[in-house]
Image (cartoon, rainbow, N blue to C red):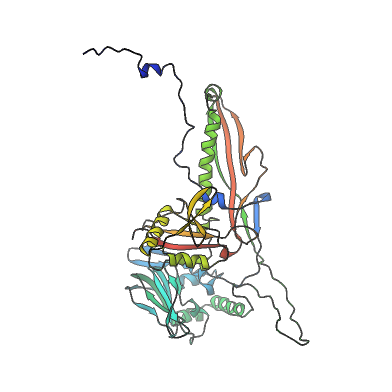
Length: 457
């Protein structure tokens, strides 16, 4: 058999041939739906002020706890998140109050509060999930929601008279760790602390002022009169301390050797490709910050009243319906891809098939006509739970808006600039790449969160 080569091999031929190349690929690039769907508002002087009507709604936050072995303790300063203690700053009294809470372990199915009974203790939920149910119009039971880690029950005990009654029944769904404080223990501390009594009196006086269902200062109106009744005079009171959002920044310094920038530019410009991938990484970080930043990120700035829990753990159509119906004109749902998959499993189990919709030429899932968009930047906790967000967007609809400033020096994209920093003695060119951004929630119901979404069931 003759194994002599009869023609030029392909390996040798490649020495004379060119190659067709792709541009540099980057696995970390995602659709960045939040950046694409947010309406961006021009923010001059890097600051955006959200003016609202004056509100009396206070103390709607959650509590935090410290855990040392089997000892669970509420952080004293966190007690100021209770409605009656918002704005109270006497650390000594708050510490004494925190010391009076006692731990109690609760089994699933155990009743923590009974509808119609007197409120004799305040309950802080350190860990676990509790359902609240009441009595409907015709005597049947009705669900009133779920409380979980950091929530509290019976906080009205601090300002209401002893005859005040529980308006719902609270029952543990899971094993719970709760902290309890009896009414007489709190009364004893209030008797000893003049600063606490003064603060509680001010809270009671504030509660008597007229306000609407959103907790805003009421606008007095008259309607239905037929004669010459004296009409009420009124005015619209503004929030004396409106929140201001300052633009945040994500930056990096891109370095390119002059030899590379001068010689290695065929068929693709090296500096341009380096810049393209650097900007993509900055945009990914920008979207992450819009969701997770402790100061302005959406996950940390949702109003407590707009945060709900799943009924049973996994995200169900019932949970999504409740999330959507709590606000007008929801524009998008945002969830981790694993949460979307978990929702799909629940729909399949119920033989419900979500619809689809088209955004920017892409087909995406939708629920009740609201697109359900994926983002891997919503975190998954160690216990395999996550959150789902719903947004109403746009300034005209009092929604969620993105903030940026355009017209920057050396602007490369809206809100992003590339500034030449010079060439070092080692012949390295440096560019400062910066993007400026923030996000604002104009009114609380523009943003809702479905929390404690279980992914593993």
